[in-house]
Length: 358
Image (tube, rainbow, N blue to C red; front, side, top):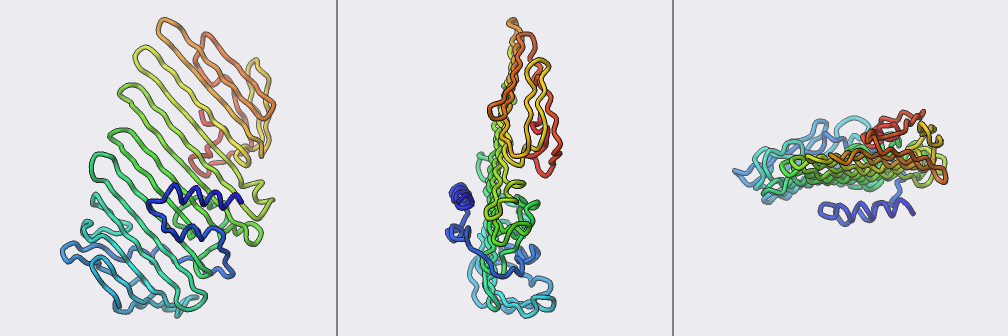
């Protein structure tokens, strides 16, 4: 099944931070949905390096028992909801952190070069379940900044249902959310991975979605070279009608070369499924290629200008068996086509529509 494959990819890609229990979450189904814990529940604590301990506050709207188990960088206690729809709900709260982190550091405040924190809540009465968050940061040495975050909501109490319009956003109560990346600003390198898996409110009962995103670049500006790769895959399982408007794949590969005597720009961009909409690719001389929602479209652009040798450019557009191509031996001013569409999707960076951003 597509969702299972997506989860396997995500857990493999984020193995450094994903607990093994996440592998079992992918096909779990909830019979009731009281909602994930509010984000304000997490991070009501901070590191105190002077005492090798965690300073912990009680979240607003809860009563908190004295910690029953404590150790260096470890605390466990029972908290109880007071008032509201979940009045009387009891949770076991567990916090683990590296107390060699900077004093005052927590999930929302990481001023030091390193940080590790893990917090979870286990429901004791009602239908049970677990809601957890884990975060890692490492900015030591000269290899840039590595960050990773895992959010997990398992069991009937915490697995919320969401509209697929929110799929791909982090921190909104999905069953599994992963973010992992390394950014090396000095050496102009970045690699980021994101995975979001949850239950679709706007689909048939039991429908699930998965969104995978990758955003990489590796540049050498001093020597006139830049490159980038962006990828996003969105799938829904359990509702064919919803899949027709949600399932999509977007991929951009770009490269720019600009040393003293040669300039070259190259890109390959594809859109599939709901990422296409209805439109047409129009060339001045080549055939016009039309596309409709659900199609798989492709565009390649190459423009090159060499000192003493002249210019060259080519644009190729494909939709299934239909294609158009235009090239020039005197101009590198790509693209040589104009794309019109009626979709206008602007939900995230991967879906800024031409449908191909220039």
